[in-house]
Amino acid sequence: MQVKGGRERHLKKVGGDACLLRGADPGSPGLLPPRVLNPSQAFSSCHPGLPPENWEKPKPPIASAEGPAVPSPSPQREKLERFKRMCQLLERVPDTSSSSSDSDSDSDSSGTSLSEDEAPGEARNGRRPARGSSGEKENRGGRRAIRPGTGGPLLSWPLGPAPPPRPPQLERHVVRPPPRSPEPDTLPLAAGSDHPLPRAAWLRVFQHLGPRELCVCMRVCRTWSRWCYDKRLWPRMDLSRRKSLTPPMLSGVVRRQPRALDLSWTGVSKKQLMWLLNRLQGLQELVLSGCSWLSVSALGSAPLPALRLLDLRWIEDVKDSQLRELLLPPPDTKPGQTESRGRLQGVAELRLAGLELTDASLRLLLRHAPQLSALDLSHCAHVGDPSVHLLTAPTSPLRETLVHLNLAGCHRLTDHCLPLFRRCPRLRRLDLRSCRQLSPEACARLAAAGPPGPFRCPEEKLLLKDS
Image (cartoon, rainbow, N blue to C red):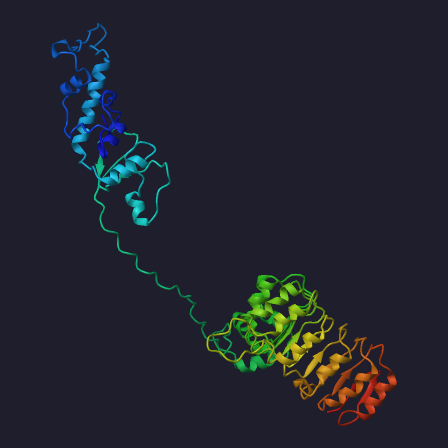
């Protein structure tokens, strides 16, 4: 006979007697009523034609000489014991004969009445256990759960309300160390008194020393070591021709805060250069000639508000796309910011010798570096007469600001571009050396006429004008 709902699932779970399902028709209305059978009724239902007096009695245990009597196994006895346990389980489980139970029993392919759900500890965390895990399982009703694979009694726990959400974590702020104590104004002596010269007088003496002598003075005493870190003693630091830059060297540069830094022909990396530029806000001159573009590209993400001189001569693999990235304003402007200033708006001297510049790069240069007074385009293979026309056009801002112009080694320049330089009234130095197609006679005529006044030629194709 078929039992609907939760009872059928528990019959299959505990392995009920198969004789209850033999003579029943699945479609017949005569189903077993929801009541608990005792062992005698269960046995009579299995053997309807056998009177009670002919039922097989359990045999008494056979005693042995070695120990206590051991009961002999009987198939009927085992069936009765199993059915008794089944009845005990049915008494504890409430009657859940709802339509949802029927649909769950039909859709359950494994034949069990329990479905996987979150464990109490995992339910609070919002995670579900993996399928087939040996954790706690809960039935569809959400009231009782059982440990699969164990014959223990059913366990139940109340599912309380969800725990309150965790309070938001406070924002983490950078805890900076306290400021350094002020430097002493006097030099303490071993006798306990102070030196008569104050700190300002000592700094004037130190200004006449070079970097090597200053490093020797820093080893004399702690007071001199602190005084020698004054940035007025380090206006320029030269680290050129170094194969590698170590962290102590970078820390020393930042601590001295120089106004001019020379990193030409060094193996500085992009990460090191970005670390330096973000900590040298007062840097005015930066020399990066001979470095790779991979490291020089750090200029595209570093603010340099005080920069006045930028040297990018002989940088490898620089094309128009890289120069566009360097000249264009940063894309991450603040909300409400209407003015888009380029990174080289305040640069007055720019050295681009040996780069593959084209007229497109020069147009960007005129637009985003309008305050240039000195421009070095020497040995640029693509610079020719049209480039000079762009620099001296009436719409060019450099027409009124150029003072020094270096075009040495530009082999595309001809004599037709020389009259165009008369448009620059402030031009004081014009370098046209090593230009193959320029004749010395045409350069001499330009020097004699000049823009407002005549030039002098200390060397061939080098025009200078005294201010």
